[in-house]
Structure formats: structure tokens, C-alpha cells
Length: 108
Image (cartoon, one colour):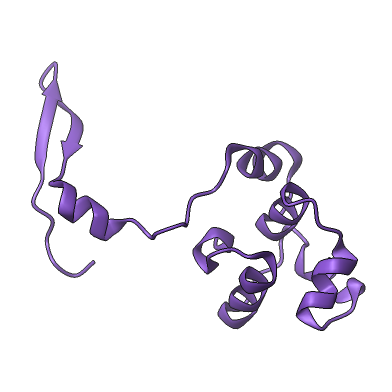
């Protein structure tokens, strides 16, 4: 965001505890539909999954099915799903479309 945000700070015991922003400004900060379910986050944190793998399993899809949607091999999707793999923006966009997600839901 390049424009400053108008906010109010609420303190507790003399220290900042909350920041309150006007609702219209808050809505500008939210990417519609870009939330991540607890189950997906849990797979990433507790099981060490990548976001693509966690989402795929959450959605009940096989690697073969997603790979077919992407027009790639199952082995290629397996590489994409590695936890340490850094994905290009174009890959994230294509993968999001194949999974029915917003690209922001796949960004670390």
C-alpha cells in the first residue's frame, strides 16, 4: 500500500495493544477470497507440507488429477509440491486456477 492508513491505536498498560482502522480502509487491505482454512495451515506447520500439497490434499484431489488439469506429468507436480520449492508467479497462477483458488492462497 502506498497511501498512509488512517488508524487509531488503543493502549493497554501504556503500551499499544490494538490498531483500529476504518472499515472501508480495512476492506481495501483484504484480498477477496484469499483466506486459508485452518486444516491447510495445520498441514503446512505440523506436517511440513508445501501450500500446494496441503491445498491439494484438503481439496481431496490426487496428484494425477491436478497434473492433468495443468497439462504436466504427475512427477512434475510432485516436484512443484516439494516444501522447499520456490515457485514462479506464473506457476502459482496456473496452479491456483487448476485448484480453483486465488493465487494469493498459494503464496508463502
